[in-house]
Image 1 (cartoon, rainbow, N blue to C red):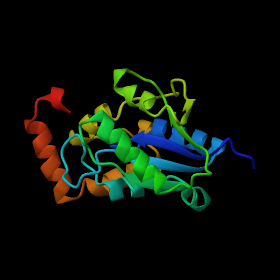
Image 2 (image 1 turned 90 degrees about the horizontal axis):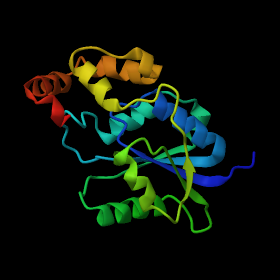
Image 3 (image 1 turned 180 degrees about the vertical axis):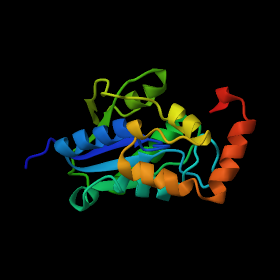
Length: 188
């Protein structure tokens, strides 16, 4: 099969990984030999906005794909640096460790709102711009429901649902749920 790209970069926090994320990866796999998921907020401390570690998110993502597709999905861990220039440099350097100078690298994403401005910060990567995806939603309401004890299965692939059920049985979930219950909802 002839692909348009050698690598497509998909940037996100995936907290949690939901159906719109999965649909984006499937589109990427149809257009690229490989995909690199740049997992944002990859620092080690957990909080109610970022409850899952980068390795847990890798597990969550991969559990939803065939073994053949899993071999085409790669990850880089991007910590928060709160400076666009430094952040872009970090993302580019992490991607550069995975690709060669001969590889055609692109960026896949959807300009859903003002928070998607970062997609324009990589002009050297051709953009595979997606329109609004069916059932597309923010992960924020999924997390809020999760902290209330609900798993919104209609918005999640099976592997994510299984992961979230197992995570609910951990002390970490109980601690995060307690923090959520004590927070102002505008902070999540």
